[in-house]
Length: 294
Length: 327
Image (cartoon, rainbow over all chains, first blue to last red; front, side, top):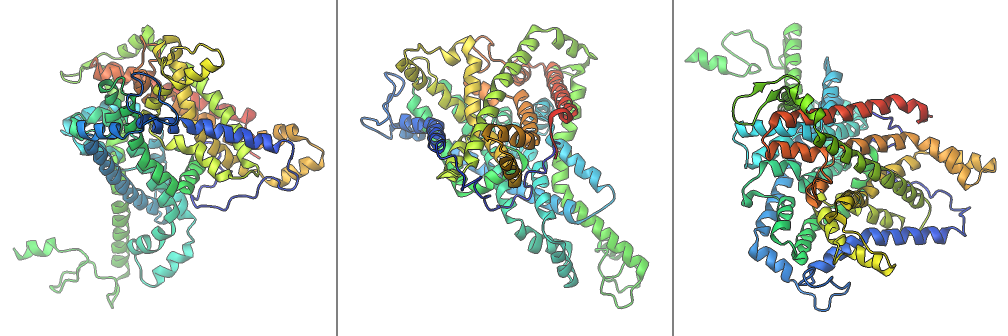
């Protein structure tokens, strides 16, 4: 692993550093810089705006490209989605799967992280290294054998086939262990003197103090589960079990030229992540900055 | 019956019927050795219970399949009939197959287009958004937005933006008198389309990592450089660049690993087409498994990919001393 000493690993929000140099700003360059960054942001944001505009412009793509301000905006694409496809069902599937996977990852990761932070035993370093090694195994290598395994367990086309392989996250263990290591040990000592066991120290002292990192992990688990494509594509077959990304991918065949419908589906898929992101922006950015995951 | 019930009792339970088993911790007459071993057993039990929920899935669904894939790669197998041992034949077949070469070639093409774009763009943005400008956090947020969007949505949206006849990009190119290409419908432009969409999605990700690296550079280095009369460029060249090199290294390692595993956007934007022009390695693994039921070949290809990624990473690790500056 590359040296990460420069990156904050605790996962805690830290105050923004002072601006590079407020006193000697290159005043001539600054407006140009701001203009460039703002223009860039508009370009970056434009695809989102265009998605939204297209989704309320009936007939988009069939006849002509939509206008930036639609002449007669309409929700017909959304109605079409919810009436004539199983989109409502699919959205609920995705929400449920993401919630369950995230919950399981939080539980399994925080328990393991507590051991790696607070409960030494012979060979612990090697076990932790083993956990970290699994981060480097690409999903693609696992795809064939995991599919066979799930088929033998009769878990193909079953949510368990998606949830079980995703219920533990070595990355989550790593993230939370780093955070737990920064919780002062005097706190557990004090609790131990009061007669608290590991279970209580874990639940009452350590866990509440790593809240920000739990938030980071929640956002990332939810995001990767909500956006997951390859593995659900392999496992889930029945239309009523499909998740949002799968439904969106298969819609391309069904609505080849009805771009308003496809963009409406995209908007529905973006919205929950957007809400979570706005709500937890600092945890997301902190998480990326400290560990470099997506 | 009585003895069975007694044996089933918890070992920690106090027993009145003369059995000298372990005693509860608050026993008034402690037996140090027995107590210590009981406490040790309880500790081991706690460790086990805390680790099992994550260790079992990781062993069953990551470590075991990893080696099972290696085993499968040495066989011919259609996923149904019994496996037939073929030794290294699968690897031999793959290495001589032009489709493999094309898939690796396309993957490398993707990386060569994608990496410079996101690195240079991300660095520029990180430098700009590290300076004191108004609405800095808001702007960072906007640039980061695509990172939280799913690949499938990104692919759909970009297929729409890059639509050859009614897409916005070709409209804008038309304003400048340029005749836009067929993008994802044209074999020559399929991969550039994928690269463009990928760069848009990942730019904010690279920016944030580089920002974290920039913020870790001590300000007094810049002060010292200024005192020595260093200008903007020479501060960038002689302070920022070397101090940022560990982060740059990290970005390159991560991007190469992710780049070799590119799949979702290819599957959703072009399906590997037109005419295989954008087929990447993982797409090939997927097709071999689920379209042609060649599990042995697919496993061999996925292991080849893994070995390539491993080799590339090891080479980078070995080469980092030459240019990465760990001050």
